[in-house]
Length: 415
Picture (tube, rainbow, N blue to C red):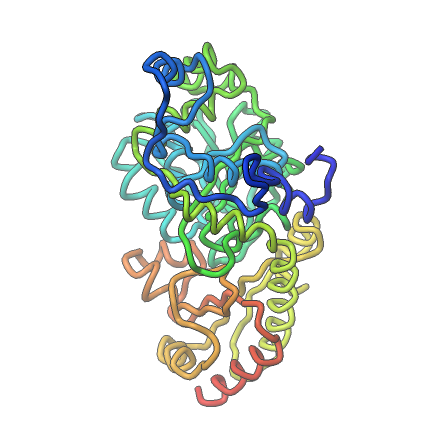
């Protein structure tokens, strides 16, 4: 039934309708470490998979399960695994699919935390990462080798704000029988229908737009059910198919990676993010409209050198973004103000916008990426990610757009 509902209905009713015992319509928080069984035989059956049952919240928890099911319904997927953070979701996927000696072909337009994960953990672990321009399909093709275990990209580069043509990259991945993994944190299931564009596994940092208020950390991965895990390159996944069949990837992600690394989502955070999904559609509409209006205002401002936003017609990826994101362009933009000093002056003078390391909040947020998230990257690495000394990243909130514009205008007047 839920697959027949529109997005807004699924975001409110999927995964949990009401508590069977009490009739409560708000998801209960099962804040417990473990779950008791009446007999030793029952617990043994649950541990050995002969019957379903919750065992330990590090493995699965009813509150977390409800959140996973709602996300999965929004993505029309095969199943979801929630994690402690977006970074944990990415790490879980790579541990599940790659082993030392394998390779990843990744977009070079990456969030700084993802780049550091690749460089400081997986490269030293013996997994080679080949970085390419995400808007260059031939670059992806040239980088693929017999050892490539997955292709990785972001729907919108953060903070470069370039937009890859996902369907073309998906065709290439299918041709080479390689899973395409896409981070859709900036677009959410509301803007980007990952399965429609051929993505095999989609990731969300649920700390951002999904939770919506900057009050929690979490992540989730979704197997979209359109990849043949029986014939994948990973020997580890093939081994799991003997027991789990089509659910082999999810089984390895949960039972072998999440369970052993302990990167589980807490029940309370799952509750908050489950609640955030109910208003996701409304908030994303406002984020997108505010961001477009602010970008248009700043593009004509004499004290702003450059505005980068996929929704501006002069953006090189405008047409791709328009077709992929249902005519919307997300809530993130960047501005360049000539010098680092001018950036710092501007950040000091804004009154509504907050200066902090997050995005997707109801509040408008600012950060100077070069001196924060990317401070330990080389100039070449920063440039590849679209980071410059005079660049500010703006996550546009859902406040009155008139107040946001007035705040930016008065701050720019003093720069």
